[in-house]
Amino acid sequence: MDFSLALTHDCNLACRYCYAGAKRRDVMSRDTARAAIDFAFAFGAKEMQLGFFGGEPLLEWDLLTHCTEQCEARAEARQCVLKKTVTTNGSLLTAERVDWLHWHGFYPAISLDGLRAMHDLARPFADGRPSYDACRRGLKLARARFPGVEVIIVPDPVTIAGLAAGVRQLADEEGVARVSLNPNFYTKWDEAALELWRQAYEEIADFYLARHRAGRPVAINVLDAKVITRLKDGYAPCDTCNFGEREIAVAPSGRLYPCERLIGEDWDLAMCIGDVSRGGFDEPKRKAVLARRGNVNPECRDCGLRGRCMNWCCCINYTLTGAIDRTDGVVCHHERIAIAAADRVAAILYNERNPAFLSRFYQTFA
Image (cartoon, rainbow, N blue to C red; front, side, top):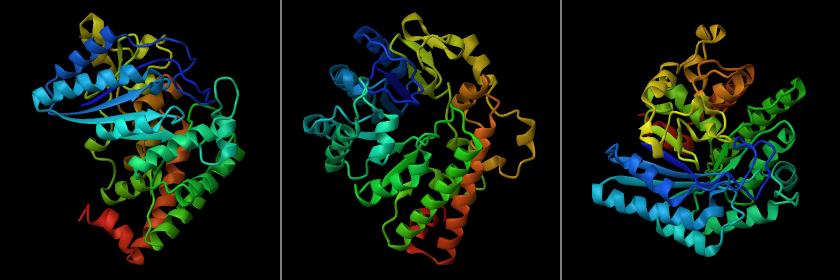
């Protein structure tokens, strides 16, 4: 079970593409947190992933540590395997906080948009000051304890020209081994920006190829995922998210959503499926939401890439089209360029019998 707590609607940054909407000083109360934890553990799951989101969750550090310790105690009593994650901009990390996260077995993810110019354009502090140095300092602190820390870049039309250089800098200069590209699907991409996006993915694929050839592979989510879908002949049911079923997000108010991306400002209640303070799930509404999962785009039906395409992502679909089962052209563009880039370098590396590539993928799927 994936269980996410959005601790606050507030953030110390003002990212141009934030899916959480306008920021405000609304914080989850301890009573709501306790009700959310009660609700999550009532499922009786043997494994649980506990994730902290916001806003910026580290603004509520005391609440984060309190919830973690409560969940750890519950998990130990119930013999439940508990995996803990936190997604943060990194600017509020300190050595003491990193040590605490390490001691408690967290898997952190840090958002940092590659190059200084890219980052400061897209991710300034709330008062307009550049945030790159603070976020980079947080990344360095995290890497001291978490060498494999994941770094998230958000490709956006305004910063797309620097995307490939940003990935290279993170890997080559900062030593980052895992880069996740989480595109801003929720804005207008004109034809020029779409072409720059394609070129960026080809450049990133060339970098991915070079790093594997050098025996220093870097994990890049959009390429790794498409290599895996090629080997598995598409997404397996276990690869797609458990939207609203075994994946639940709790807003600071206590309202339940099928994904943390759909909490937003917690005012559009179309995707709200219950409230931890009012008995949990609204089952009729939840079942109605779950029944609409899938993809009904007629143009997707006969597409040869359908099985390898994320047209099933309900939260992206809903934000783009207002329907969880209907996607939009920008998703199609992204999936096509990601698949083309991944297939090109995967074929080269396989034909070269590259040991790093074969070890990463073919031992797993042998």
